[in-house]
Image (cartoon, rainbow, N blue to C red; front, side, top):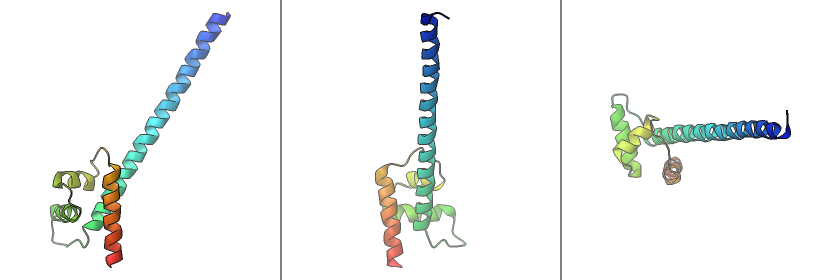
Length: 105
């Protein structure tokens, strides 16, 4: 293999390695988003407590959304873990509300 071919082969290898690193970073970011959505869902469900046995799930979601002044559609997508992302300010509100509720007990 002449030097030109060797350089081309190395760039291909380096190109693949860079792509692998980028895809690994994308996977990590996606997993972090999933974890954020799950955490937000659990926090929202904590806010809806106590859950009445005869109440509909929609009632629980409305109670939780009202307690933190979230839009009902947004609260439902978080509750059902269907949200694509959770913004930092939303997590801050959820965490603060749950912390406040636990302190009130």
